[in-house]
Length: 293
Image (cartoon, rainbow, N blue to C red):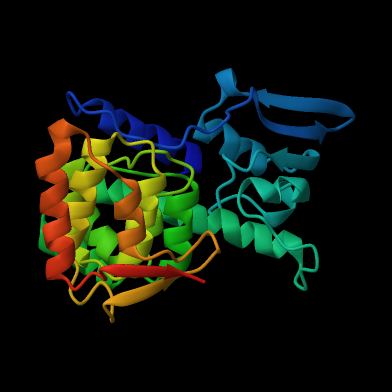
């Protein structure tokens, strides 16, 4: 089954879920599925004429001298590596200029892996039974870091079913899920407060400074920022700072939590909420003094 078909199936399933809008990557589907030379005449398969059966028959037709298939419709089960255009590889993965392997073979592998990834997403929505899906994930031979890259780059945020949470557990660890929950490309997190709380209950918080920095830099309103910082503290295990006095560097990154809290001055209406955040900060041994170096 092609990547496009998986894409459409998942989109259709999401449309059946009421009152929620979930993000799924929109492919820039152009009108050309395949092009080739049959005899002496050019051949074009347009999207409106496409079906997988038609594409299979074209691939297996020995009368084609050349045949190129758009990367979204290429299927490892019946397509060959020579059916791919090398220049399309950047649609799937940014390849270094000094690559040392055959890009044609690499591109074929990338397409195959992406088909697998969409298949896993499809099954996370389709499979009924938490134990069955966990067994499926356990037996799945995937590179978790690359799958995590795929989810982050494509900004795939599916409904928080137990299956999808199990998938997130399979792919991420507490030290790298932060880039998925608070991506720099989104100015506000996709998942709302209750959903974020559910996810963090499975992962806990590791690098609290980075979490608070992401929240601070987001476009959430002040009340939301207080609530998310409070939530992050709830799932943090350890001390925020090691000493009563910490140093603030002139660099943009790695500021202490107290620095961001000092910049988020409350309005009168939010003073009590802000104070509750400060109380948590103190309970986790947040530093009371700062010095810039």
